[in-house]
Length: 329
Image (cartoon, rainbow, N blue to C red; front, side, top):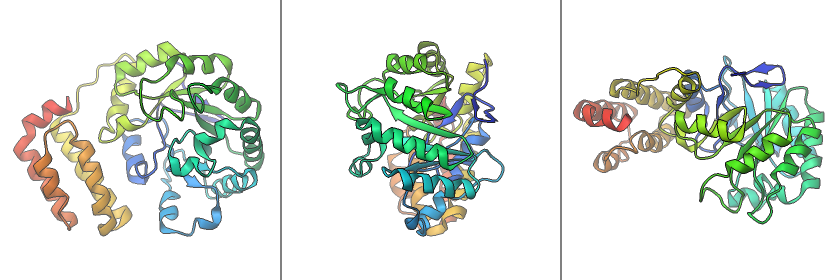
């Protein structure tokens, strides 16, 4: 299968990590890259660069020097979006990604994210401003429309291509649908058929077999993985193997333990112990979501020391390795 090209960049794999606020921080992006993600996209940055002085924004701007760097921006003002894109490119972004897919109320209230799909003229103004402001490729993430009655994904995709967008990621739901119901792979197929630029299919892809089925159904060039990668960064390894016709053994309990411990250590280093402890709790819950671990989670969430978290995970796996192996498989 042909690899995906975004401007001058050839992605090494067809499964890409979706940008997710509060999740796709640098430690998680690095972990997904280690497991074969073809590209990772940073957490969303608001376009008002005057607010980037906060610690939260500094952490979202953190970069991995050894990987292709895609930075996502969101906003509704064309000049502000262009300025944000230019600043990100100056700071080393290889790709600028524009968010027009987020369904969150706090984003849509600012007429940003997927709310923009109701205003094609504003979409065009933003895309033209951003692509003119930078020399690096610009990509776009959208939904299939604002609501089931207003599915304009094909028109937005054609507009994006005309404005110089280098690749498109499409979540197969409207904004109104949020994450409910089944993803509209027929809608993604129509969008792919309408444009020549690479299209990534996004929505409900949680296994190698599902990735292959979605690519066959939509004709998309690759898949974008979001929620399914939470607690399962090795999903990229499984999808890559499946798409290449290779067998991939399920992750072992021992490897799962090592991945969790390495991830928690990275979170402690990146955020500092106090904040790192809090963020580690939600990631630990995701890693163990297929295992009955309510008692462990209650105890883990009360721990106030980084080493105590690491020791707790180690002991948990020693006590439950057989059951964890079944859950991981």
